[in-house]
Length: 184
Image (cartoon, rainbow, N blue to C red):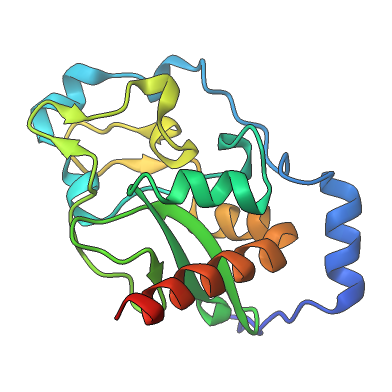
């Protein structure tokens, strides 16, 4: 059995990805596929997946991707900017992504192990957002009979889509950490 080696992105790799994926639309997303929409099955399990962690946003989930627009969205209180160690994906380094915030979770999550905590938008009746307003990770979730749902929008896909926006995400992290330090 062969061993997997760590993959490190060079500047050339990243530039190639940026030119070939034209920004956020790295993965085709079929939001209208009925396999993602089964509220009865979701109601049966009570949102087990949403009780583990908030789902990922894609850059596609935002109509405007600039500093001011994202500050306004993040200040609404339901978004976390999370740092992910790329080692688990056989790459080197770290990358920032955006996902739904967990209850009592911070705006900036620097822990290398994602906390196992309920999504801030989970209610007794399911997600507080209607299907069309959920992040990509929630909209591309495939409900399963026994509550072991799968997402067609994996952590790795989220990382790859957010690679083009690392500078912007770092600026947002600096902004919110600076505001926290000033307030504290």
